[in-house]
Amino acid sequence: MDAHRLDWSKIEELLLTKYLDSSSAIATYRKHRQVFAMLRELAPDPARINDRTILDFKARLASRRAATINSLLRTLRTQLRTLKREEIITRNPFDNHRWMERKDPKTKAEYLGNTSHLTVREMLALLRQADTEWEFADCKSRWRAQRLRALVYALLYTGLRKQEALGLKREDVDIDRNLIWIQDNEFRRLKTESSAQPIPICEQAQDVLRDWRSANAGVCFFPRIRDPNQPWMGGDCRYRPLCQLAKLGNRAGIQKKVTFLKCRHSFATLLHYLGFTAEQIARLMRHSNTQTQTSYIQTDLEQLNEMRSRFRIVG
Image (cartoon, rainbow, N blue to C red; front, top):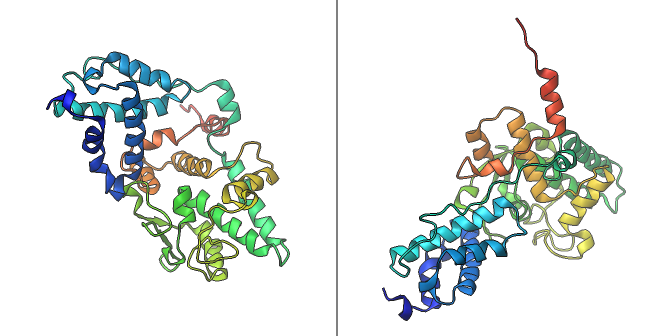
């Protein structure tokens, strides 16, 4: 194939078509679009893609985390392999060099700050705060408090992603079987094919989710106040789910900002701490690869102190 006669629009079609209509690869498709846009800007002539292109690509990402840089580099490597296979380029710069970044070591400040997840103590504080606010809420605010309480329990006890949780329909929460069915619907598309799996509802969350399901008669499991048939997305920034989670964390005395992703990281970390195997964690997190959750699982000083207290040498 003559690279000089092949413009970037045809190369884009070649690289992205395989992901365009696949609901199982929407996250991958977005990443390929991002990388392709950078590649096109860095190399106006595709035939001249070389080591300098990779260096410039990495320079653009200098402020990002090593894990993010490596993820985008792997996507770029895949695209360049395709271009070489189609004889658009004669050499793939990844063939002879290791361009990946070393993973950033965890600093003392990060151990002390625990910014990527909540400790068990903080998770319990968040749950207690949600319980207390619901229990003592007046008639006007009780519905809001119960909705937020159910959301917190769902996030911390299932590890749902943001769009998965907010896009749930009432029929997706199967109280009789104690399962949450994750599937595509008109409110959101799933991140990956492996996302579409049932999730068990543990005993601690069953009553909370059952009570909320009974109190909510709309189509959506977490609906808007004014329209129970629309998910709790968007709206006034003061009442958005992310803002409500962060404020609840502040009222619970948690120093770090509580987010959807932080709850998911906390869920994975707790599973690891409780002794679940990598395969079990991958199943509950709905990761297609057991290596994926390594970026989710963290170790904090609270866990290290617990390990120290259990350590004994006996003769």
